[in-house]
Length: 352
Image (cartoon, rainbow, N blue to C red; front, side):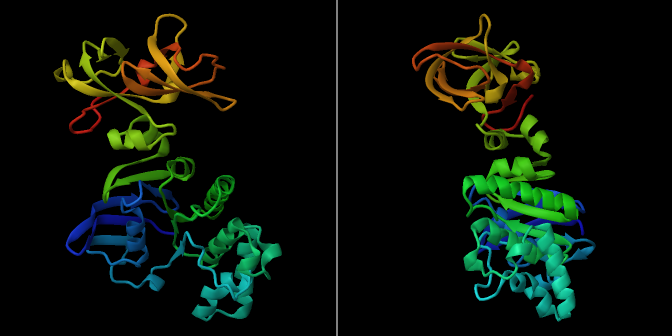
């Protein structure tokens, strides 16, 4: 196990910079998720840590060693890919033990390490099968087992669940998290799925266009996003972001006043702001409230999603109640003022 430190890491392709001075500290034994939309640079950054992409500038430290000029095989890392990358002509046991065989380990040692990894991943009944005889989830577990037998300092995962169906992804998320808790190893995991990031990570690194937008625990990013991008990206359904004008402790959306408890600086008075409220921080008003014109109702059983129009702007609410209103009806709702986020519309940064 080892810590991983990125110091002003940059990547340049044909004079175009795609990774812009990334600084991230990953503690020994930490599970860190790099998350962001497609093309944001997260997989490129992971491949730079692995040694599969050249580092244009900056330093990557694994433990106390700067690994910029060290080959991938000598970095003491193991990588699990989206495509499994199993050898079709080898059994599960042979696939898992291949890297140890290439190192020249004794057959008895290879068999012992493969059996230990197979027990951790419940692969013992499958050791003599070939990849073509396995399901997608089983193949991914074999790929993980191949990484485990190497006992690396750092595990790297590059979107390992994206080829699986929705139900199996949920199962495998739990298996990878349980694996981390059991091994206590440093793990760096890339995904575009913010639900994976929220449920698995000790620490999340949110990326956009090669920049790091925010680093923190899942709940820190959820409760206090630093900017509009993080606010809109983290959370499902996403945060409601309404354009309005701040005046005297409220934000005015047309002629509707929405409450705020954490006030911005007095200099904000009279200025345009973005009012952020998560769908689950809306409630049906017992009296008063503001009018939401219902457009779509989506009952899920435990909750009801309501999509509506508030003073010309789209709002989604998540309610525990069984709602019987129809599209076109007016539903009166209220916001929890303690859960309101205010952002500057020009700089896109948080201001309360």
